[in-house]
Structure formats: structure tokens, C-alpha cells
Image (cartoon, helix red, strand yellow):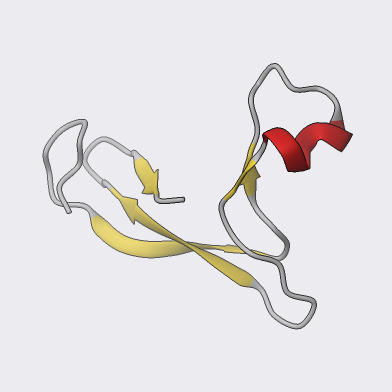
Amino acid sequence: MNCPYCNHKMEAGYIKTPKTSQWLPASEKNIFKRWVKGVRLSGYSYLANMNVAAYYCSHCGKIIINV
């Protein structure tokens, strides 16, 4: 995959998380609404850490995560 910012080759990898990872709008302060307004990036497991697939560009320092 090529970086959409600088067009250099990106390296495939993952971000390891101990719990569910999600993106939240910066304007959202209510933690109870996070399940409604958030975008889940990884699952949740009581037994194992979860991984979020990601691509990293070492040229411009961007990380791309597919949801």
C-alpha cells in the first residue's frame, strides 16, 4: 500500500491493545455515549489482547487504520 499523503510505500503491521480500541469525536465528553458515537477499531477478549491492523509510513510518520 502506498501512503495517501506522500505516496511512499507503507509497511503492514498492527497495533496491539489490551482492551477494545475505538475512535471518539473530540467534542464527545460523555463517556456513556462512547459506545454509540465511537468507531470500534478492535474487538474485545477477556483471554487475549486484540490487534488492530495498520499501515505505517516511515517517510511522513502517518499510520492508516482500516475500520
